[in-house]
Image (cartoon, rainbow over all chains, first blue to last red; front, side, top):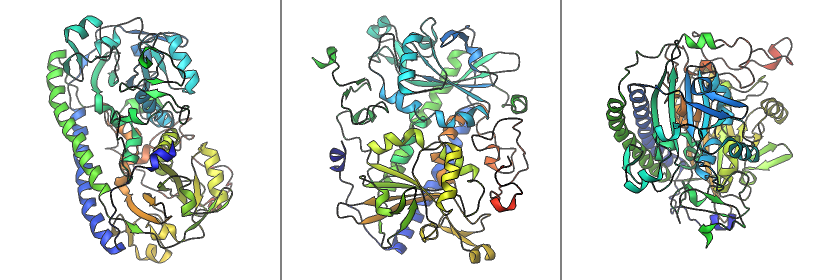
Length: 266
Length: 271
């Protein structure tokens, strides 16, 4: 694997003196500071979005029984939901969602002490979720929306008839997303009287906010280095326990372990 | 713990119908997409920076003996160094760096797959680093620059002289700084001939992008919720120090961790 990566050449570097480097670095710093402030301003706009009251009573399947949306707040007033791409019976684990949630365990203590609860939700039945959780050694809350409309209502799962008719909605656009389940992140707020509000959702490249690894890679000489075949993280990301063990990833991000003989390979 | 947090109120929410929300959300989406592209462009500019050849042969103390800067690359051509604020004699690492440190382990296997090696570097001697790393349960590579000039050359440690004058060279300018150690991140490249180049360093809020937890908080109604705090990150604790009556002192300013020798019982760390 490494030999292949080493082939990627960085752009012909311009090697200069420390003094010349500093001049260039200070120019870039001005741009970076501008960007930091633009980001602060965008975040303020995100929080200025109006809210929508959640009227349905969503009940999820958890590892030890039923849990309502209100219970997922777990005593806090803010809830972050990761819509994990995993439909019923789906054996091929999504490498993008897996990469995203690998970022979470280390920061949960901090989020939970800053009034934020976190949970992943997938449409697969809870038994299938538990099998993946165990294999990946993940400990964050992860529940199943198999028995409710949550995934459809928040536009991360799509009914076949809506896909065929091109009336499914993903990332705020109508069309045929091409897959029954896609990735997203949603935020909810619960007030003192127990009312729940939907405040924010993001999809597509919006999810890059939660891929901290891209902040690191973006600083490296080679950058993200996604040169095909998919020109996305599907080029290189694997479930964290499968690096160097072969297999393949579809453009959709679904990982097929070595020896997989499903229809994709014929 | 929770009741104290609940006191922080969100702005008066504007509750609307689903269709009105969608209109507002779509407007914001256009700005978000613009922002994503600006970030792509800035990242491209970062990679266009010229490089500086590293002429010194830095030797660090690692968990199993001496390791050169070149060794830290292992079989990779790119190296990230996180300049972790842990000075000689400190009883524990800086809480902000520890918050950042909580982000590393989950992504390392993925970074390694992208031709990137990682190491934290601190000026504290190795036994002190090892003890703190063990307490925090971290797995990432961490070496000591106690016996070389690395920290001074990359402007994350300051001499007694500089501290006495109240002027240090940090984040590409001259300023006062409350501690002898400062946070930073540096990037190095090693070519096939073994030459090492310094390609990038960031300091201060330049490190904000590495705090993934902020990316989560930034989207929640309360945001970072630091406006009323004298120091933005003063709500942050070491991840093993949140328990039992966690409260936030709004007036708290940055304090360097105490020297272990200053406390009467250095084995029992105050929260």
